[in-house]
Length: 204
Image 1: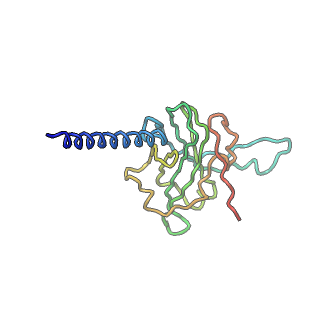
Image 2: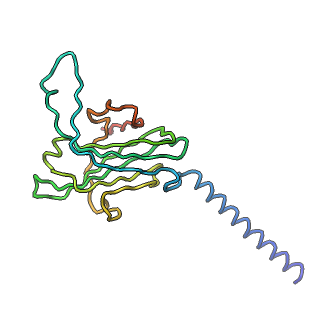
Image 3: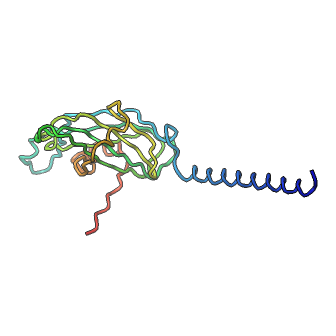
């Protein structure tokens, strides 16, 4: 092999090595920019529906007739654990499948999202609610699912049904599932829960 050929081969090898190095660097930068999926970031330890949760009663100096009534709410509670020292935001999206008893059992899938901010390493809790009037109209909850995201990446899912991603089969109905800041439970066990990111008001 003459000197010219050896030079061309050496140049080709060097160029290939540079491309591999650049690709590896870019991949590493992408991995560092987004949370990695799976149990290395978050682990859902338990998801349990809690039907029959009574409306909390806050006593004031003046008694009211409304305080004597304690209807049942539906609630789902999740226990989870995070590994990083801090996570800026964690988005929990809940899906609840029901059959509308006021409309011949028509299928309905409610969706509710709550975002927690400044989540420290350790064990935490999340919950979501259905108002008593929703239960009175719809009947019982059939299935529940949860999808947890950070920066748009899915980190964990949990479901009471075995069918994967069953919630994608339905058109979701928003605005019915309520996070605790939208309910009378917002001040109950306040320090057990992470700070909820306020939802920006829609522009008019």
